[in-house]
Image (cartoon, rainbow, N blue to C red; front, side, top):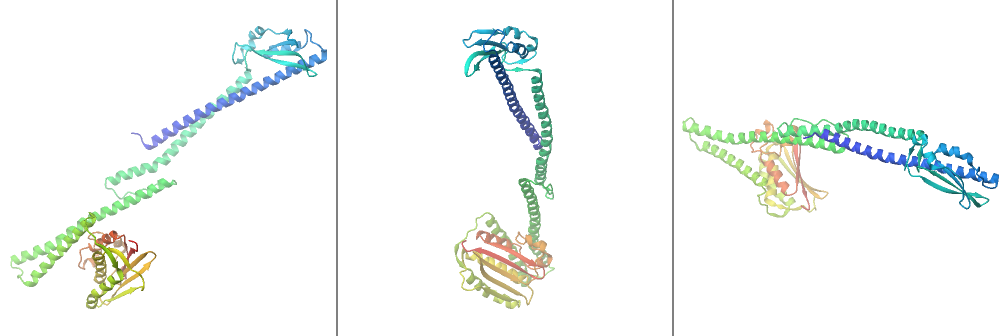
Length: 456
């Protein structure tokens, strides 16, 4: 199995080789065609010069003779082409033998195309607009290349090869760099995921990338590690809290019963009532755990109907009147009038939410304190705020207040409760498409804010 860096390097290398071969192929074809066109243009220029030469010879002599234009024969031999001069009736005046140039050494030294095939072209010789003769120009190749031409083409091909090799070296270096640049963060993510699967949640992905997708991946993996660590902490805390919550009433029952059996404590109605209260508290804990199980399995049933939150909260204020008088806590209910505060939901469950939150506000508020309930609209939502000026919640405890059996610091643990109430509250609200937030300052107070959607 190959690493991603090795695989990327191989892909870069293969793509580079293929690109260079294709580029070199087409560049070579283009240069050869251009060069051949250049040679053909030179030959055309030569043909025009030869025609002009014979026209000048005829103009000077006024007729054709056996010596007309013979001065061009030497140049023709040196240029490896044959000349044949004919009059206007195609009678040969003089002509060169093609076999004479085929056997010449300097022709053999030249590179020819279609070697062995004699090719010729006939051109008209004009004088005062009339055809006075023809010159036939022939050669054993459509294109003749001199040594200088060959050296020029070879130098171009060598340049292409050298440029390709240099480019290949540069591409290899760049491919190694970029493959490392791309693979390093991915490799770190891979190593981190292995560590996470092994239960090591303290790792953090530190390699910063300027590639958006890799940076998003980095942030997501770090967030995943934090959440897994958070869930692992909750799991350990949950096990410890459940053990504590179950062991406490059982230890109380066991110790008191053993003391009664050993006649250390007398069996009195007061002591039996105390033990009964512990049994009831234990039963409530098990009942709340069962409610949470039903929420998580989505087997709990809801009876949805129209709920008027203003009327429900008004009734609850009256229900808590006695509690506020007994503890000398002022209970305020503030509402914006002439607003429709109706929602769809399970009235008993929503009532349970408010009872739990208001009970907690009274529970953690000192004597002569106050509890405020506010109801008002906001955008397309209905907001319920339950505020107290009690002992508050520490900042480090705020993220955990809705977790199972979480009881916060020792000062809050001294107050009776199972630690499941807020968890149940949040689950009920989630089933009603509502949200709950908490803000708190230690020794200042706490505000729980519930947001119901009007179209829920």
